[in-house]
Length: 459
Image (cartoon, rainbow, N blue to C red; front, side, top):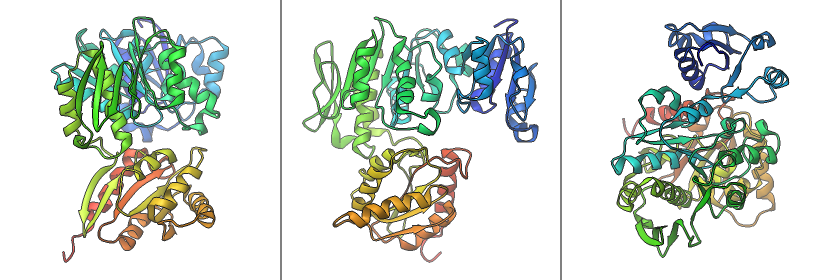
């Protein structure tokens, strides 16, 4: 990078790590963000020891004059005018994930999917650590791995979550690439399902014959990628006994590799709730088996792993009601998976900002599994209308009422009022947080704060 002029668009977590890496590598770095200096004071302070120039409040096209590379943070769409202009000038595009993969001294495990990728990434990391390997976990999960590049050794294990936003411009694939599933998501950004699938495909598109593609056998779109990569396919399945990979059979999770059938653990021993998490454990086991992790370590993690924050996270039990934070559920399909994780009556908090996704399957599930629905945020009214439409045409269901409110605070107050002993109150929004919060984690943190502030009976 010595002497190259690199423009970084966006100064969020990825942008800060990328700007630091590039400046230390000798590049002439210019950072541009739509926000002003007052909104970026913390990020700029973290970089004040480096010779970085800032252009704030917009992305003027003059930024491209003399630029050798344009690096995009995840929030910058490809149809942004400056990106379109860069492509017209044949200025290469990159991001932190691409630059990391090009330079990482250890083989990388890359994991993507419409649902479950964060939990699976965390599970693989824990399995590698349980097996005694020095392990690095990051990417879209929250830690930009490019910040750790100098400390990674060739014998380490590197586990990287990759989003469709990162993948859509990437021209390199990891040694082990996993696609858990591909279902409608982020259509507000990608516009069409074809574009979204194409972004996901990039994780396997640039692999070679010595690489591995770990694919969800039960998901037709993920399974079909076996025909679009020269890599060796490895599968995981919750219902089929795959030739090589991980699968569920007779109440057990099993791994088949090199012709050997090995038991990982019993299904009832898995600590995480829900069938979707059984699939996540299977995916993690299939991946971990490719980097030398034994079934003992896999089983140990499956029996003890309590989950990732904001993913079906038990916050509190109060007055016989259990409160769960599933703020990560930013698509209606993920809410359906969450609802299927519980047998108890559910008070569901759903809302946020829609991503132009279909809500009808969610409505059918809500009518049959939810006792009381509380909607909030920009999409709250739309969600309530879709569910009411389903309710009017449905037979017997469990839904007793729908309450529409404006804010998360009001939603929690409503849930407190309508919940009964034995109920589960579940924040599983189905929409993004951007109508009211910085990200899903900030929304989940606020929910947990509200739940924990409520006094116990008689206090």
